[in-house]
Length: 279
Image 1 (cartoon, rainbow, N blue to C red):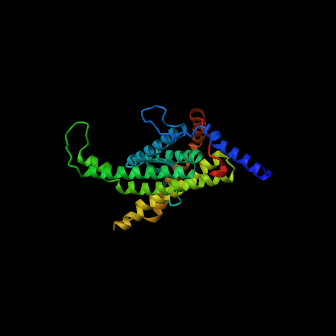
Image 2: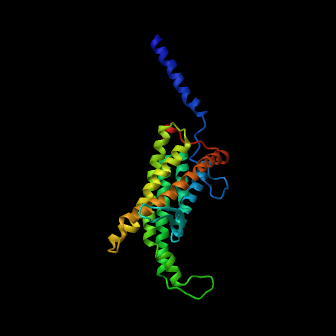
Image 3: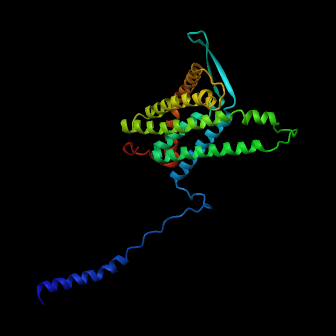
Protein backbone atom coordinates (compact mmCIF):
# COMPACT_ATOMS: atom_id res chain seq x y z
CA UNK A 1 0.00 0.00 0.00
CA UNK A 2 1.39 3.41 -0.87
CA UNK A 3 2.71 5.34 2.08
CA UNK A 4 0.18 8.16 1.78
CA UNK A 5 -2.71 5.69 1.82
CA UNK A 6 -1.21 3.94 4.81
CA UNK A 7 -1.06 7.27 6.68
CA UNK A 8 -4.65 8.02 5.73
CA UNK A 9 -5.76 4.61 7.04
CA UNK A 10 -3.99 5.20 10.30
CA UNK A 11 -5.59 8.63 10.62
CA UNK A 12 -8.99 7.13 9.99
CA UNK A 13 -8.39 4.60 12.70
CA UNK A 14 -7.53 7.34 15.21
CA UNK A 15 -10.63 9.32 14.26
CA UNK A 16 -12.78 6.25 14.66
CA UNK A 17 -11.57 5.96 18.23
CA UNK A 18 -12.39 9.62 19.04
CA UNK A 19 -16.07 9.17 19.99
CA UNK A 20 -15.12 6.38 22.35
CA UNK A 21 -12.64 8.63 24.08
CA UNK A 22 -15.07 11.54 24.29
CA UNK A 23 -17.70 9.22 25.64
CA UNK A 24 -15.66 8.77 28.80
CA UNK A 25 -16.03 12.49 29.63
CA UNK A 26 -19.07 13.05 31.86
CA UNK A 27 -21.65 15.49 30.48
CA UNK A 28 -21.77 18.95 32.06
CA UNK A 29 -24.08 19.43 35.00
CA UNK A 30 -27.44 20.98 34.19
CA UNK A 31 -28.05 24.60 35.13
CA UNK A 32 -28.45 24.65 38.93
CA UNK A 33 -31.79 25.75 40.29
CA UNK A 34 -32.55 27.23 43.70
CA UNK A 35 -34.80 25.30 46.04
CA UNK A 36 -36.55 27.86 48.28
CA UNK A 37 -37.33 25.14 50.82
CA UNK A 38 -33.65 24.63 51.56
CA UNK A 39 -32.02 26.95 54.12
CA UNK A 40 -28.78 27.10 52.13
CA UNK A 41 -30.31 27.57 48.70
CA UNK A 42 -28.63 30.95 48.23
CA UNK A 43 -24.91 31.40 47.76
CA UNK A 44 -23.00 33.63 50.20
CA UNK A 45 -22.85 36.40 47.58
CA UNK A 46 -26.61 36.17 46.97
CA UNK A 47 -27.34 36.26 50.69
CA UNK A 48 -25.14 39.32 51.13
CA UNK A 49 -26.77 41.13 48.20
CA UNK A 50 -30.21 40.31 49.61
CA UNK A 51 -29.36 41.62 53.10
CA UNK A 52 -27.72 44.82 51.84
CA UNK A 53 -30.61 45.54 49.48
CA UNK A 54 -33.17 44.92 52.23
CA UNK A 55 -31.40 47.31 54.63
CA UNK A 56 -31.15 49.92 51.86
CA UNK A 57 -34.87 49.77 51.09
CA UNK A 58 -35.82 49.84 54.79
CA UNK A 59 -33.60 52.85 55.52
CA UNK A 60 -35.05 54.78 52.60
CA UNK A 61 -38.66 54.05 53.55
CA UNK A 62 -38.10 55.03 57.19
CA UNK A 63 -36.25 58.18 56.18
CA UNK A 64 -39.30 59.33 54.22
CA UNK A 65 -41.80 58.34 56.91
CA UNK A 66 -39.84 59.89 59.80
CA UNK A 67 -39.16 63.00 57.75
CA UNK A 68 -42.32 64.72 58.98
CA UNK A 69 -40.65 65.48 62.31
CA UNK A 70 -38.19 68.38 62.39
CA UNK A 71 -35.52 69.08 64.96
CA UNK A 72 -33.28 72.03 65.78
CA UNK A 73 -29.97 72.19 67.64
CA UNK A 74 -28.61 75.55 68.72
CA UNK A 75 -24.88 76.06 68.13
CA UNK A 76 -24.44 79.45 69.79
CA UNK A 77 -23.10 80.86 66.51
CA UNK A 78 -24.69 83.51 64.32
CA UNK A 79 -24.67 84.50 60.68
CA UNK A 80 -23.30 87.91 59.66
CA UNK A 81 -26.83 89.37 59.78
CA UNK A 82 -27.27 88.19 63.38
CA UNK A 83 -29.51 85.23 62.55
CA UNK A 84 -28.78 82.27 64.85
CA UNK A 85 -26.91 79.41 63.20
CA UNK A 86 -28.91 76.33 64.18
CA UNK A 87 -28.66 72.78 62.88
CA UNK A 88 -32.16 72.15 61.58
CA UNK A 89 -33.34 69.11 59.71
CA UNK A 90 -35.73 66.17 59.79
CA UNK A 91 -35.53 63.04 61.90
CA UNK A 92 -35.41 61.21 58.58
CA UNK A 93 -31.74 62.22 58.62
CA UNK A 94 -31.07 59.36 61.05
CA UNK A 95 -31.70 56.40 58.69
CA UNK A 96 -30.99 58.19 55.40
CA UNK A 97 -27.15 58.16 55.58
CA UNK A 98 -27.35 54.39 55.95
CA UNK A 99 -28.46 54.23 52.33
CA UNK A 100 -25.16 55.76 51.22
CA UNK A 101 -23.15 53.38 53.38
CA UNK A 102 -25.01 50.41 51.90
CA UNK A 103 -24.56 51.81 48.39
CA UNK A 104 -20.81 52.01 48.98
CA UNK A 105 -20.68 48.39 50.17
CA UNK A 106 -22.73 47.25 47.18
CA UNK A 107 -20.42 49.08 44.80
CA UNK A 108 -17.38 47.70 46.61
CA UNK A 109 -18.43 44.04 46.39
CA UNK A 110 -20.81 43.83 43.43
CA UNK A 111 -19.86 46.71 41.14
CA UNK A 112 -21.69 49.70 39.73
CA UNK A 113 -24.42 47.82 37.89
CA UNK A 114 -25.54 45.88 40.94
CA UNK A 115 -25.47 49.01 43.12
CA UNK A 116 -27.54 50.92 40.57
CA UNK A 117 -30.00 48.03 40.41
CA UNK A 118 -30.52 48.16 44.18
CA UNK A 119 -30.97 51.93 43.97
CA UNK A 120 -33.69 51.52 41.35
CA UNK A 121 -35.39 48.81 43.44
CA UNK A 122 -35.34 51.03 46.56
CA UNK A 123 -36.72 53.95 44.54
CA UNK A 124 -39.49 51.75 43.11
CA UNK A 125 -40.43 50.42 46.56
CA UNK A 126 -40.59 53.96 47.93
CA UNK A 127 -42.90 54.92 45.06
CA UNK A 128 -45.03 51.87 45.83
CA UNK A 129 -45.19 52.90 49.50
CA UNK A 130 -46.22 56.41 48.45
CA UNK A 131 -49.02 55.00 46.29
CA UNK A 132 -50.27 52.74 49.09
CA UNK A 133 -50.19 55.60 51.59
CA UNK A 134 -52.14 57.78 49.15
CA UNK A 135 -54.75 55.05 48.70
CA UNK A 136 -54.95 54.59 52.48
CA UNK A 137 -55.68 58.28 52.92
CA UNK A 138 -58.77 57.95 50.71
CA UNK A 139 -60.40 55.30 52.88
CA UNK A 140 -63.08 56.51 55.35
CA UNK A 141 -61.67 56.52 58.84
CA UNK A 142 -63.17 54.95 61.95
CA UNK A 143 -62.27 57.11 64.94
CA UNK A 144 -62.58 56.57 68.66
CA UNK A 145 -60.86 53.18 68.84
CA UNK A 146 -58.04 53.19 71.44
CA UNK A 147 -54.59 52.95 69.92
CA UNK A 148 -55.63 54.21 66.48
CA UNK A 149 -55.16 57.63 64.86
CA UNK A 150 -57.93 60.08 64.18
CA UNK A 151 -58.29 61.68 60.76
CA UNK A 152 -56.46 64.89 61.70
CA UNK A 153 -53.46 63.03 63.13
CA UNK A 154 -53.27 60.63 60.18
CA UNK A 155 -53.43 63.45 57.64
CA UNK A 156 -50.93 65.50 59.61
CA UNK A 157 -48.40 62.68 59.36
CA UNK A 158 -49.03 61.24 55.90
CA UNK A 159 -50.72 64.11 54.12
CA UNK A 160 -48.63 67.16 54.94
CA UNK A 161 -45.36 65.50 53.91
CA UNK A 162 -46.39 64.59 50.35
CA UNK A 163 -44.17 67.15 48.65
CA UNK A 164 -41.28 66.40 51.00
CA UNK A 165 -41.66 62.70 50.21
CA UNK A 166 -41.46 63.34 46.46
CA UNK A 167 -38.54 65.75 46.82
CA UNK A 168 -36.69 63.26 49.01
CA UNK A 169 -37.18 60.46 46.48
CA UNK A 170 -35.86 62.53 43.59
CA UNK A 171 -32.87 63.65 45.66
CA UNK A 172 -32.21 60.06 46.78
CA UNK A 173 -32.16 58.75 43.22
CA UNK A 174 -29.76 61.38 41.89
CA UNK A 175 -27.63 61.40 45.05
CA UNK A 176 -27.23 57.61 45.12
CA UNK A 177 -26.36 57.35 41.44
CA UNK A 178 -23.80 60.12 41.85
CA UNK A 179 -22.37 58.37 44.93
CA UNK A 180 -21.88 55.17 42.91
CA UNK A 181 -20.04 56.99 40.11
CA UNK A 182 -17.74 58.89 42.48
CA UNK A 183 -17.02 55.83 44.65
CA UNK A 184 -16.03 53.78 41.59
CA UNK A 185 -13.88 56.60 40.21
CA UNK A 186 -11.99 57.00 43.49
CA UNK A 187 -11.47 53.25 43.69
CA UNK A 188 -9.93 53.14 40.21
CA UNK A 189 -7.75 56.20 40.84
CA UNK A 190 -6.36 54.78 44.10
CA UNK A 191 -5.97 51.25 42.79
CA UNK A 192 -8.36 49.87 45.40
CA UNK A 193 -6.47 51.50 48.29
CA UNK A 194 -7.51 54.31 50.65
CA UNK A 195 -10.95 52.91 51.43
CA UNK A 196 -11.74 55.89 53.67
CA UNK A 197 -11.24 58.29 50.75
CA UNK A 198 -13.71 56.70 48.39
CA UNK A 199 -16.24 55.96 51.15
CA UNK A 200 -16.22 59.35 52.86
CA UNK A 201 -15.37 61.40 49.77
CA UNK A 202 -18.16 59.97 47.62
CA UNK A 203 -20.72 60.40 50.41
CA UNK A 204 -19.70 63.97 51.20
CA UNK A 205 -19.87 65.06 47.57
CA UNK A 206 -23.09 63.22 46.71
CA UNK A 207 -24.91 64.39 49.85
CA UNK A 208 -24.00 67.98 49.06
CA UNK A 209 -26.03 67.68 45.86
CA UNK A 210 -28.72 65.71 47.71
CA UNK A 211 -29.16 68.43 50.34
CA UNK A 212 -29.31 71.20 47.77
CA UNK A 213 -31.73 69.33 45.51
CA UNK A 214 -34.24 68.25 48.17
CA UNK A 215 -34.30 71.71 49.77
CA UNK A 216 -34.62 73.51 46.45
CA UNK A 217 -37.42 71.22 45.27
CA UNK A 218 -39.46 71.38 48.47
CA UNK A 219 -39.10 75.04 49.38
CA UNK A 220 -38.86 76.67 45.94
CA UNK A 221 -39.48 74.52 42.83
CA UNK A 222 -42.65 72.68 43.90
CA UNK A 223 -44.36 75.80 45.34
CA UNK A 224 -43.59 77.63 42.10
CA UNK A 225 -45.10 74.79 40.04
CA UNK A 226 -48.22 74.71 42.23
CA UNK A 227 -48.64 78.48 42.22
CA UNK A 228 -47.91 78.74 45.93
CA UNK A 229 -45.60 81.19 47.74
CA UNK A 230 -42.02 79.99 47.46
CA UNK A 231 -39.33 80.49 50.06
CA UNK A 232 -36.65 83.10 49.62
CA UNK A 233 -33.64 81.70 47.79
CA UNK A 234 -31.38 82.78 50.66
CA UNK A 235 -33.51 80.70 53.04
CA UNK A 236 -33.23 77.75 50.66
CA UNK A 237 -29.44 77.99 50.49
CA UNK A 238 -29.12 78.46 54.24
CA UNK A 239 -31.37 75.49 55.02
CA UNK A 240 -29.51 73.33 52.52
CA UNK A 241 -26.19 74.38 54.03
CA UNK A 242 -27.17 73.64 57.62
CA UNK A 243 -28.61 70.30 56.55
CA UNK A 244 -25.41 69.49 54.70
CA UNK A 245 -23.31 70.29 57.77
CA UNK A 246 -25.22 67.60 59.63
CA UNK A 247 -24.85 65.16 56.75
CA UNK A 248 -21.14 65.92 56.61
CA UNK A 249 -20.75 65.09 60.30
CA UNK A 250 -22.74 61.88 59.93
CA UNK A 251 -20.77 60.88 56.83
CA UNK A 252 -17.47 61.25 58.69
CA UNK A 253 -18.89 59.41 61.71
CA UNK A 254 -19.97 56.54 59.45
CA UNK A 255 -16.52 56.14 57.88
CA UNK A 256 -15.59 53.29 60.28
CA UNK A 257 -18.77 51.58 59.08
CA UNK A 258 -17.22 50.75 55.72
CA UNK A 259 -14.29 49.06 57.47
CA UNK A 260 -16.60 47.19 59.85
CA UNK A 261 -18.72 46.17 56.89
CA UNK A 262 -15.69 44.89 54.96
CA UNK A 263 -14.56 42.89 58.00
CA UNK A 264 -18.03 41.40 58.55
CA UNK A 265 -18.42 40.48 54.88
CA UNK A 266 -15.03 38.75 54.83
CA UNK A 267 -15.70 37.00 58.14
CA UNK A 268 -19.30 35.91 57.59
CA UNK A 269 -19.56 35.59 53.83
CA UNK A 270 -15.96 35.00 52.75
CA UNK A 271 -16.16 37.50 49.89
CA UNK A 272 -13.57 39.86 48.46
CA UNK A 273 -14.15 43.32 46.93
CA UNK A 274 -14.39 43.79 43.19
CA UNK A 275 -10.91 44.52 41.74
CA UNK A 276 -10.15 48.21 41.21
CA UNK A 277 -9.80 47.82 37.44
CA UNK A 278 -13.36 46.43 37.27
CA UNK A 279 -14.93 49.12 39.45
